[in-house]
Image (cartoon, rainbow, N blue to C red):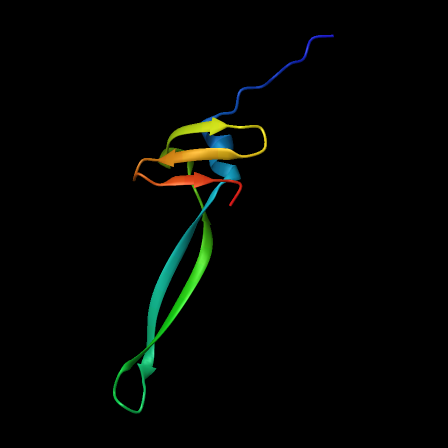
Length: 75
């Protein structure tokens, strides 16, 4: 029986990885007049248009994006 292996597309690779986006928000000022800064991080999906190249290693996928980031599904 022959094994059928399906090649992964850029869209499928993009679905498996996420990038961490950090946003900064000034929520007010403290007693000394210094700004109170709140930092939040969230995971954002990568779109297929952002994928420059990808490699499927079986257990994880590594994606190189058009803006130069290297993202992995193992992280």
